[in-house]
Length: 283
Ligand code: NAP
Image 1 (cartoon, rainbow, N blue to C red):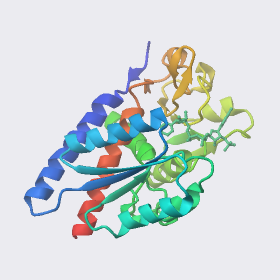
Image 2: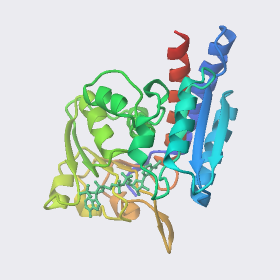
Image 3: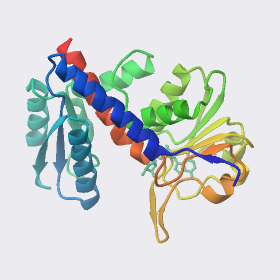
Image 4: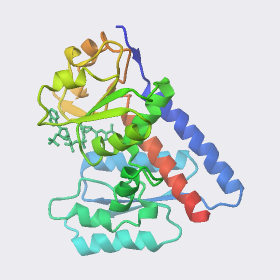
């Protein structure tokens, strides 16, 4: 294998340690303990694990977290009321509504009811707009985790050709703004892109956020590129990324594994966002 492995677990631990130190000095300086509120509707086992991991991470960083678990048949008005009440509760710094929501609920309206100053997932129209305009705001955790990994790896984004495969609101679109803000020349590919392989081969930095196991093959990758795999696909052979790891690792200079790449970064960046909100509310 030619590529070096970008160790997301290790980088995530560095971020978590950094946040823990900053929380300790914020509190020692008279600040309140930063607090994350999570809301989960229903009892999807995967979502329950994600939420539990977020609470554990908060605790390990010296933060507080509160949780509101709601029945699967909770109605829209009830959910929106709870989210709004967190917005007006001064002891709460970050609000996270675990997605996806059950089908009978309107996720857009729920997201719109999150106080933008506490929107640690960076999904409200206000934060989406600030990011698109290149202005400071709360940025979605997975794309900011991708940037953290690239920085840790020492990848020079200035003038680099970056290709993102996937244009979701959660990953592809915010990552476009972040990479553009770092002066990369950014292409966003999607399911209608013609000749995806040749578009991808332009990339010095290739990010796959698709949700199709091992879509990105060795012939999609420019020799020496850095490849970031956001994908998490449960297959009969276990968890797989969007990148065919073994063959792409023969071509790329650096690559993230799945698991152990982007995945661990998301929670680390959530902690950072919660601390950021706490600091802003104290300012
Ligand atoms: P999504 O909302 O389903 O978006 C997928 C994107 O991929 C869409 O833009 C779609 O294009 C594009 N696409 C689908 N099939 C394609 C194909 N054959 N060729 C080119 N583009 C294609 O997914 P997402 O939420 O961004 O998530 C993507 C992956 O990342 C999933 O595996 C998810 O589990 C994973 N993920 C991981 C983390 C983490 O913490 N590591 C966080 C979030 C997501 P269209 O727009 O044209 O439909």
